Structure formats: C-alpha cells, structure tokens
Image 1: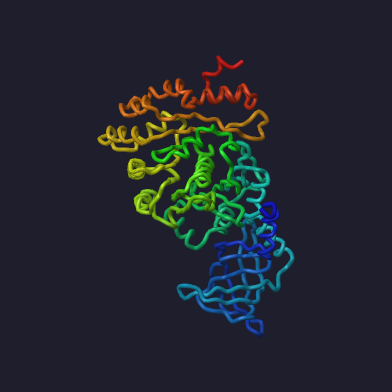
Image 2: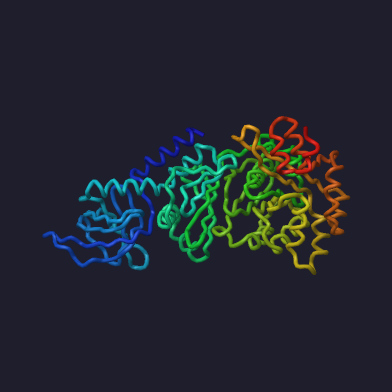
Length: 468
C-alpha cells in the first residue's frame, strides 16, 4: 500500500470536510420571512447532520438562501436546540419530496458545543479506527454499554459513557443506505460489508435486542495471509489444490474460518488456471485475478440465496466454488452434486470438532434421506479442517489450534455406514496422511511454549494427566 491505514483514515476524514452523520432525527422547522416573522411550524426528519449544518427532507421546496428556524433534540439533552439556518442546497428526491441542505447561521455557543459533542459520539469512523489501531477483532455496539472491542479474546470498553437507544440507532444508521435501512426494518436482520476506504473493510451484522438496534463489526484485515503466516498445517494447501470434492473448514464463530477460506482461494489463484466462483454473505476479502478468474457474488445484492446462486453457478463454467457457509439441506445437496460432477467446493461450517461437522452435514437432511446423504457425502468429501483461536502465553495475541481429517477409504466407510464415532481413531492413526487430532495440536502448542497449560487443559481436559 502507498500509505499506512491510519493515514488513509485521516485522508478519508479530511475529504469529508465536515463529519456528516446520517440520522433519522425528528425536526421542527419554520420559514423565516424577510421581516423576521415565522411561518407555520412543520415537522419533518433530518437525513443527516454535521457540525456546521443539517439536511432536511421536506414535502415542499424551500428557496435558496432562505432563512429557516430549526428545532431538534439531541440524545441526553433535556432542552431542545434552536438554530437559524440558511438554505444552500435544494434537490428533488423520490416520492415528490425535496432534500434541503442548510448551514447553521445563528447558534449560541452552548448549542454548538452540544452538536459537536453529539457528532463526535456518533462518529462510527472514529470507533472503527480505534478498533483497528488496537488490533481488536470486533467492535460491539450494544444498549446501555459503551462501545466494546474484543481484544485478544477479552472485552474492552472504548470510553465509559453508555449508549442510549437513540444514540445506538443514530450511530448504526449513519452508515446504512436507504435500501439497507428498509431491508433491516423489514427483516430485522442485516449482514453486509462496510469499507470506509478501499484498504479497509468490516463485516457488519445489524440486529435487534429487546427493541434496540445493535451491531457487531468484524475487522477484515486488508492483506491476505498465507497458510504459513496463519499457522495452519501444510496439508491445507494440498487440499486446496484438489481438483474435485468437498473441503470443509469447521469451527465456532470467531475462529478464523473466513480467513482460512480466503487463503485457500489465494493459493488456487496463484497456482492454477481456474474459474473460481465465490458465494459470500457478505464479501469480506477482495481477490484480484492472477492465474485464475475469480467471481465474487454477494448474497442479498448479487443473488438471492446460497442455494439459488449455487444452482446457477453450475452453469457458469466453474472449476472451484466457494460457498461461504452451509446452512440448509438444499445448499448441502447442491454442493454434493457440484462435487460429484467434477468441481472442487470449499466451504465452512459451524462445528466444534470433526465428528460434529460430519454429523451436522448429515443431520441437515430429513431422516428418510440421511442414508443416501451418508453415501454421497462419503464419496465426495475430501477433508475437514477444524480450527480454534486461543490466547498465547503473553495473552496479547492468539494462535490457531487445528484438527485435520483427510478422507481415506476407512473414513469413507465410517461415514457411509453412519459410524462417525469411529472417525477419531482413524484420525489418531492417520499421521502418514498428515492427519492429527485437536488434542495433539494443543499438546504441540504447549510443548513449544506457545500456550499455557491452563489454556490447553481448558480446551482439552484429557491433557491434564499428560502435560507436565
């Protein structure tokens, strides 16, 4: 990159000239005539506000350079703010409404300071910048708590002032488009990727909690890391270069599955001439075409669902298909079909270990279809990598622990016969295929002085009698 991300953020903020916060602030306004008399009081909404002005949406236009008295309330202020504004911009909007841009002209210092403080509180870009600079993985905006980062697994507040219902809504809505707001208010859930500048991305989930609008921001680091940099076993690269079948990355939320998937796609992009179609919700890492053609399609904006997109993908001449997450039987069924017809499918699944990953893939199907699903899955599955992120000894960074299952004839028989309970013993004896258990991974991390004994035992209690 040409400049550090911190500088990119500063430049981005400078280009905005005055930080402008999107809002749904209720506003009363009155036109001011040339002799100073006030017209009838009207009620509307402000679409955004800055330290120097406000933008209203009105049902009738207001002439340029007109003066308007604006009255509104800000969170945590008992008294309303009154400002005399001058109209500097008028634009016709949809549904026969008008956008009226106004500059503050007559405002007392107390109100000006209140607006500045409110803008600073509502400026999500500053919160995201702090989250990045501290190397946190997530930012949580939740009711009656200050903004909170997840830093090396711990929850760390940013400041001390708790966020109110209105502040939460204003902060979160400030980065949403009208279409996203409409979708969220209809479905009560929203997932998307947010980029304050080309080098910086977040995965965002907006949701309701007891009627409060809340959000979680996951930091997406700008640079793709290699398998080695991520601390993953080299067998992950070998599985990435298989020509057909299904490779699953399993683990709980926040275990780095998406990062691993991106690294695998990068390996294929560098080492194969292939058409790679990625179905993601949302798109997190942006890939550039190298030796391969990569098409990244976002669920919700580019296509309706994983299952619908996956069916159409089979007609787009793919060699490799990435499915962000396996959620339902129809998607799993289509993934198996794609693998059976000679495609490599790389995907992720929420599961704490390999056996539960296989069981979940099978249990997604109705009972009467599970025997057939076992047979098809056994024939198409190539491997499962289960991963966890755990704190290192210094408690300041985390390291990945893994379990690797490479599908052999013995494991195919276990899956085919529904005897998944036999899989761990096959993993334990499969070192020549570069398999290992999660217990072996934790034992190795402890022996290499990377993690503490407490961390190892916390995740693998059976190690209590083994580690010294």
